[in-house]
Image (cartoon, rainbow, N blue to C red; front, side, top):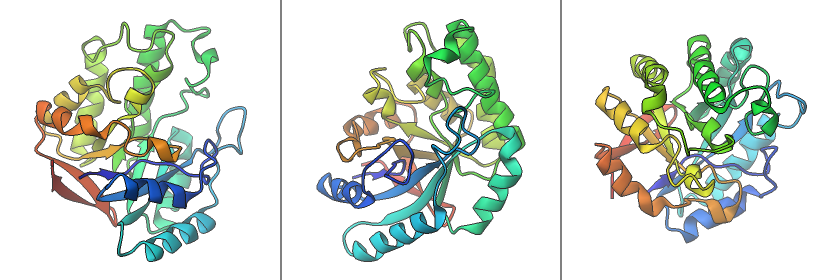
Length: 267
């Protein structure tokens, strides 16, 4: 089976699920392993305390679960960092302080606003908002790169006025290729995030054309995650993953242990 290495629990500001329920869901779905990646989005607009993470308590809880389920399910300790250029020094101190297995760098806030909120598009045309988002991803990578993969590279499309109706990799290929080439040059990966299916896009985040292009450019590190915030969404639509990976040219996927990639065959 597969690993789900992007999931959230009550330690994230947008979930109220006890971590053990996520573990039990993964066991019931016969996953080979999981990684918790609860949110840390410092300086989040309007609600600055919404995505702060109690790291000592979080680490303690994951350690408890690792011990309790040691013979049943591998559980890794990760984090999803909400990147903004001015937070780079703080993030660097953080990743050196805790023994993470896996770090996702993500863009949630674009120049002071999260596209999750409709107001992001009040003064931007959809195409302009998407382009600004991709430009901000590149800004973040240039400012901070001590992460393992970049999360849901086309996250913004989930919340656009028309979602992916008029969106395609080809429309933004110049900036997306620049992002992918930069990540590859740094030895960083991307993820296949099935949250896009949950949000009604009919495609993962990023879309298949971006996954394929990453592989064409020489990218090898690709992790899997459902971006679940509830037990029922663990491994969401994971049955689609093998065909997607093979169509995009991959024969394996990646899991991180102690920040080191482990390559596993596609079932």
